[in-house]
Image 1 (cartoon, rainbow, N blue to C red):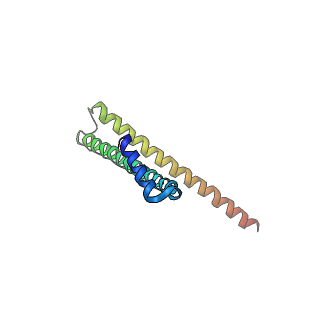
Image 2: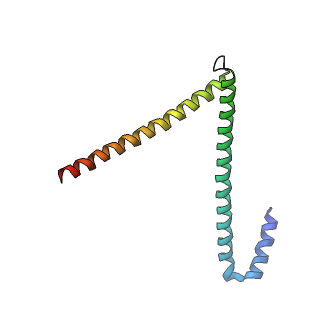
Image 3: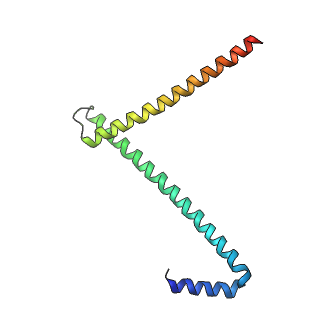
Length: 114
């Protein structure tokens, strides 16, 4: 949209809605636009993440087909990234388990004292 189109829309809005309701209408429309933009950005981020995961998955399949030997540099990078992701999930899972065990032992100690 150009400048003149916005001026025409503003004049029509002023005539149709009047000076009292026009600012409210503009705020409402701007909120809708912001909501739609944020929704579009979140969908865009999800799609790009899914594409990245799909690419990693495809590279892992290629690596498995080559029996993990003589891999291309991009396949090695993908494999390393997958290993790091698996380790981070494993570490966070172990930390959660350890925290649960510590909390359970505290509860058991309190119950024994009573």
